[in-house]
View 1 (cartoon, rainbow, N blue to C red):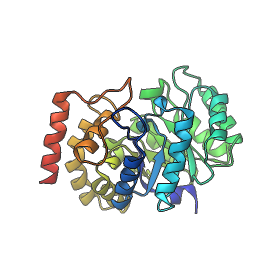
View 2: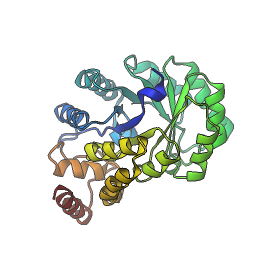
View 3: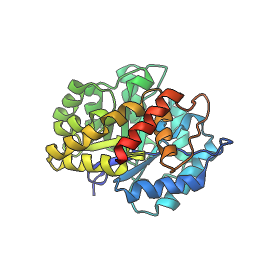
View 4: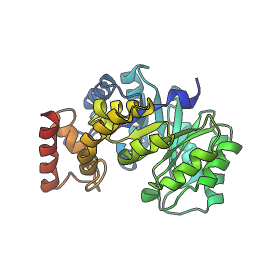
Length: 296
């Protein structure tokens, strides 16, 4: 099967649970994995930004990937996030992490140093030449400070054989539609914005890599599935229920929002590593109120 076929639908950008003393909580990581799989997500993304990867050591990353493969036990496909703003360091991490069982590598464009479009192209071309794994671009200008243009995305898709998809989180609908218009037929395009996933699927995207699917896996996955099946009436109904949830997830920072939800739901502890901190009391109260409404 192609990457596009394997990664169609809802991927969850998995959070990394921590204990009160900020160690990785592997017991709760297993609990979270079982929860999202039982609630019908289609695949799992490990070591994304939602997993607080900037605060994880290399040793922790290796252990988390190995633990996830063991806990997932081939029930759903796995994508591993490996990115950075030094091309050589990203290559080293691709060699370091146990990626053999992964379907693909998701790699955010270089942050902070703001390369030109040619620099972004050469960065990804170089990464793709150093791995046999399919590579999925990740465009998230709000975090990286630079945008992967539609032209650069399509150029990479056409010129580099194992660049097989993009997670598009620019929020620029015109850019997204341009990619969908010009891309090769078998090139995967997924949303990186939970609140835009429905209209973007309507435009032709293949699904979403989601934060919300950590805490609303059943309803969110059902919404995506309905949209992909063309049942937009049902998809809209589910999406309307989740709209306030999307707002609360990103009200202050990610993953503080989703960890607050998961903590209230009893799935994992609400613990983050600095510089991230838990939600403010006022926003957390809104999380509690929304969950009460959702459950009723």
